[in-house]
Length: 539
Ligand code: VG1
Ligand code: CO
Image (tube, rainbow, N blue to C red; front, side):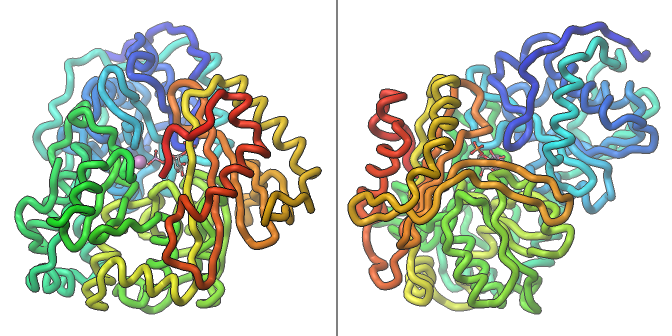
């Protein structure tokens, strides 16, 4: 029943910050998924005895791609697949399933926060036995393989029924269809004080969680409403839809507009949160209050003692270079390890495995801990609820007290989207060349203290990665520039701007950063080279 099909390479199957991400219509091309998967299987080599986890966020084409992957895994000699019921598994739940079952890796079919549907994006994230996404040297080898692939193997059988939980066999491979929510819920119960959170809801505390018609709906309904007792209807947009009901499942002030409007209205709940398409990002809101992800990481780290799983101490904390320096001050105060890595969760994996860190986070609405090897949206929401339950304080109070204690990093990210790829590449290359000449230059109130490329040397595998350019000013302010690695068309230039203030903590971030934004544009020549004077998305 095993068919060997000849194929010819696609030139664009290079993985980005988090897996392969392309327009759905690109992925629909005959052989596209097959070539990519066969290249992975070829690089892994002998698949006898190997176990993989497969699922996705339910977006358009998930159902078709998952059947291809199952039939190809069987044809390539994989011993066992653990598949989410109806093909659903969130990215954090997938990481947990890999670790819990000592699987050799897993495939989460998702383009994460990118829109779905036939005109949206599709993607595949590939993790190894660590439960985290593969390091760059492995994705480079897979890319090389995609460029020379000439055939793939597939079992020529009808589609597998994924609607029922249980075991079945396909071409000699065992398939276990599992409930994707159970193990995840069990893990959360072991980390947090569910009794305290239950009591919080009993006392009348209200929340709204926006699942954005994506994968976390079933997880959120089970955990927040059914187990913890948040009132029915607290979780909205909880049915995962192939096109996310037209939503752009990116939990930020721009795309989670419905939730933001509600939380800034007179009827606001006490607490608001949203997750992205595959459930690894989170946004935290209080009544008329937004917590930046960089601050959220710092606040969670500072409050680890309230969480049963962490109360005996944490190893350390890490952030991506583009994330604000808030958490650095917390790490110093607690005298714990502190690391700065390139953008992308895969860079945290070695630090967690080697017990250098417990928490990590990115400005892009990602927070997580060493309970798994992916960022975890619902985990972050539960962490906040646990702190609120333990302290009796509101989101705004917790955040403002944090600023009083540590000062505040005003922080905003500006995205310039749909830029021509060559223009973007040249802009970054030229900027890098000019940076060293900027040192000691004065721009209004700001003097450049240091400027150059960000280079990360991994203390565990000794690999070296260059990602983004950083300009540091004498007062501690920073501008970071980098190109996005998750887009599916054109280039996106991200400009991250930060300014620290010890006492002045109640101002509007955009106002505080007006001058630095102008400097950022001047230094980079973004307006002249792209024709854009304003960012397309500001978060
Ligand atoms: C973006 C974010 C990055 C995140 C990545 C994957 O990457 O900036 O912090 O790790 O998305 O997140 P980039 O290269 O576009 O800046 V997800 O939730 O899309 O898997
Ligand atoms: Co995501």
